[in-house]
Length: 392
Image 1 (spheres, rainbow, N blue to C red):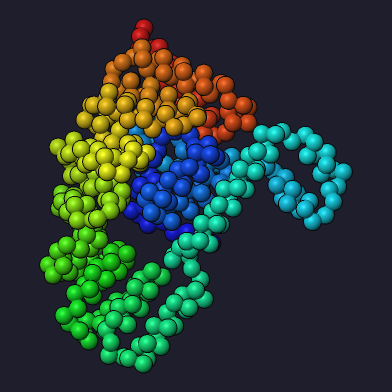
Image 2 (image 1 turned 120 degrees about the vertical axis):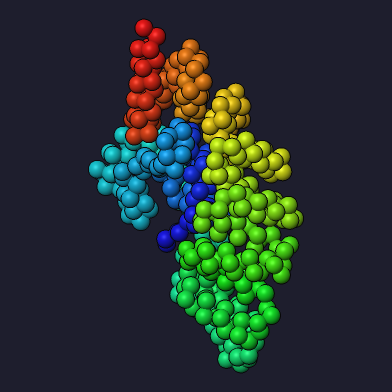
């Protein structure tokens, strides 16, 4: 099954760019994403990315590309996992029994955790199927009754609207727009057509046209918070960041239940409008934390914005809140050291880098030798060497 991740949801994942995700953390962040952000695709993506003990590299969000260079580094599952599954169906050979005798408990635990996460992925996929991933049969089951209604009542615009929504969720923009055109012909006073048209056009990467359609709809339905958030995203894509932030603020105020993505998107819009708006972006994220709670994505994006305006102590406080829930501290310590370094606090930076190195050296060999840990260790050594050279 192929899972397609929308740009908006993927942006939220990009902002969670520090630390190392253990299997337990991966599952925890996945369920938090699913329940808090109400995004099935985000949860499925995290499980799929993390099922082999995926690691998020520390410090990526502080790099020159503004936190967009996240990458997932996986430890391989147990090399003989296929044999383990097969052994349920036939007795093990002497060679397989000998191989199993040499397996470490840690390796078996790695494989079992990976299998558990894969199973949880499948469970969520079954319970909350992604529209982007549904097959032809599932789509036919949903669209065929609407087709029959259109055949029986071809002059009813609501039937075309319903079918347009189904076509949009499947990614068939042409069919969706054709049904919306037909609905508008049958009832030109039906404002919902413009709302659905805006959603289709935005999904089809025609943001300028989407903004016009959504603006027409909002002129008639100004309290429609979902349409306002949709228009804000269209404004972002056409480079009107401040207007987008204003629309997100109105959507936030009008929604009966807070939607975390609105706060994140508004902060990104303000940050994109220039450095003069960074502090306003941070205040907006704090407003979201007050309403939703201390969500990791909020705190980490706010931390990066605090660093841009030189609020180093505030950034460190946010790092503390996020890292407090992690059993693995080596990457958080390295990130702390880098913040000290940016703040010109050399001694504290050296101490934090040494602490990070000590945590890495405590890891079992199979964890320390992963690509993520190898790169982190090299980065810490390089940083300590540069700090030592600067002190001469």
